[in-house]
Amino acid sequence: MGARPPVPLPPLAEQARIVAEVDRRLSVLDQVEALVDRSLSRCASLRQSILKRAFEGRLVPPSAEVTPE
Image 1 (cartoon, rainbow, N blue to C red):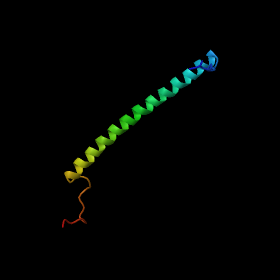
Image 2 (image 1 turned 90 degrees about the horizontal axis):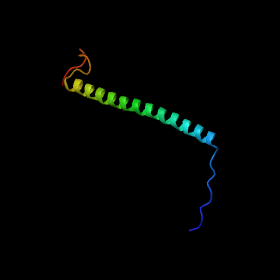
Image 3 (image 1 turned 90 degrees about the vertical axis):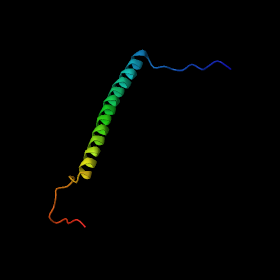
Image 4 (image 1 turned 60 degrees about the vertical axis):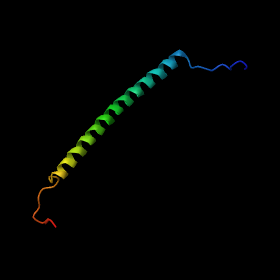
């Protein structure tokens, strides 16, 4: 194979700025991921709570208008 063509790189100051921006955005993504994980956990917990109440007959308050068949 032949020689590889040179790859142009930005100046070191620009490289440092790019790295800092990528780090900042990755940090934001980490925070979003943690928030999503907490939200999913909360959803699972709420789902279990709703199902438990439903099977116990405590999902809605008793009503005089509802008659069992």
